[in-house]
Amino acid sequence: MTLPVDALDASIFDRSLIELTDDGDETAALSGFFADSGEGLDLADRAALRRVPGLATELDDVTEVEYRQLRLERVVLIGVWTSGSLRTAEASMAELGALATTAGSVVLDALVQRRDRPDAATYVGSGKARSLAEVVAASGADTVICDGELTPGQLRQLEEIVKVKVIDRTALILDIFAQHATSREGKAQVELAQLQYMLPRLRGWGESMSRAAASGGGRAPIGTRGPGETKIETDRRRLRARMARLRRELAAMATVRETKRSSRRRGEVPSVAIAGYTNGGKSSLLNRLTGAGVLVEDALFATLDPTVRRATLPDGRTFTLADTVGFVRHLPHQIVEAFRSTLEEVAGADLILHVVDGSAPDPAAQISAVREVLNDIDAGGVAELIVVNKIDTVEPTALAELRQLAPDAVFVSARTGDGLSALVDALCERVPHPDVELTVLLPYTRGDLVSRVHAHGEVLGQEHIADGTRLTARVSPSLAADLDVFRA
Image (cartoon, rainbow, N blue to C red; front, side, top):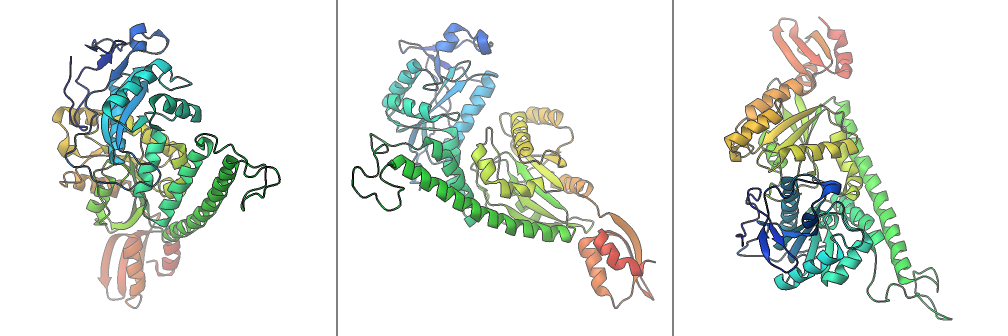
């Protein structure tokens, strides 16, 4: 049975999988075929390499894309399904397809194998690797992308079998980050993450990387340690030197960022960070709330450089709103480490707006993935407000399920503006209030203090009398100290 190939963003959860048998025939998979998991896998289930429908990119026009580390063109996706339901496995492969498309690739085919664990040598097993090689040759692909992080040995052995370039999910995400980084700090963070990933995987072709820099009485090239150092040792040493330099540069940039945060804290301005799964609409929401004019693009990881804007609540209180890099399932630890200074905007916030894409196939899994990263950056204890975005694209039944999943969430559409008033009301309630409540009588000659109270405090009442301006307000302790002599 042959199934039609739909567009990448089409729903693939209501279709059957195709099983590729050893003789190449295609047979329809049974609906209850994937019920078991772990040690009790069905023998035929374990032996099958199945095509995932709906993951071929259909594009009329493919423009040239500039790549910094990788050049991805015509790709075949391969995944190993070790646990969870069929829906979870398909969602993971669909996300890998979206990542590949964001990187500029054309997805030709997608395959998944059911195993209790990835093969230690070739990720999918030697027999299935040969079947994958046949699919690659038949489709004309030049790259295979694996839905997982491969060891250097797995990469090398799988490449030897399929005869094309093999990369893993981590390398794909790093390539997308490299394409989207614009600021000096963002570029340095991405380069550091790439070097951390590349260092243990550094290898050459043929014997070029194992040759000594010089032999016998020959003179060693400038920059090497001596005649006994091989080319791969030289390259590793240079990579480590470059990584050390990048870490020093990022440490200096982190000091500048901390200085800015300290300035905001001295002004007692509450901070709110927008966090969430990639392509959930965080930048669109920031633009709606503050008119920041931040780049909005229907692509994964469109935002890498944090944007901080000041916003004012209806009661006059001001706060900062920071847009941050999006998260994703199995976000590479190199990214988390390299972007730690940027992610400190989240860890140091008073409130996290956790934006969830309501139109996503599995919002609950996205919420879990984001909270996992928040715990990694020590932001798990920060107050959280879930904001379900894109409700204008969600069916009523799915929307009802979301309301049951997150009963305390705010449901909005950054595109249409629906629900934004409810979000503003929630912010008024959840953004921290100043600590000190007082009543002061300020003479008309101290208009500067009146302005400071309005700018940095919460005015509860104001009255103009003969002796001056009577204010009842909540203010920070530092401002309260300056106002203490005028208490009424």
